Length: 64
Image 1 (cartoon, rainbow, N blue to C red):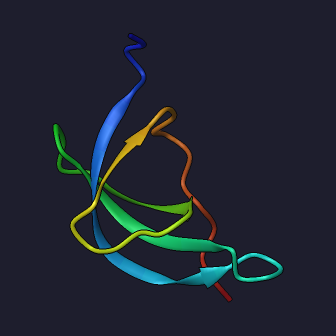
Image 2 (cartoon, rainbow, N blue to C red; image 1 turned 90 degrees about the vertical axis):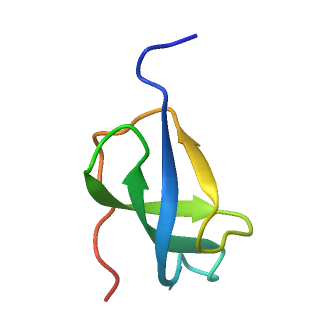
């Protein structure tokens, strides 16, 4: 298993993005850390879901 894989909990759903609204922008907090970042998620997601992030340094741009 790769050491870069991290689990994060969805704390807020910010809105839909993408050309057809197929991506949801969410705020996540890392389980093993106190950091909180914004990520884009494809598929159904709600507050409290746990995401497995393969890459944890990149943050999504804000919605306009």
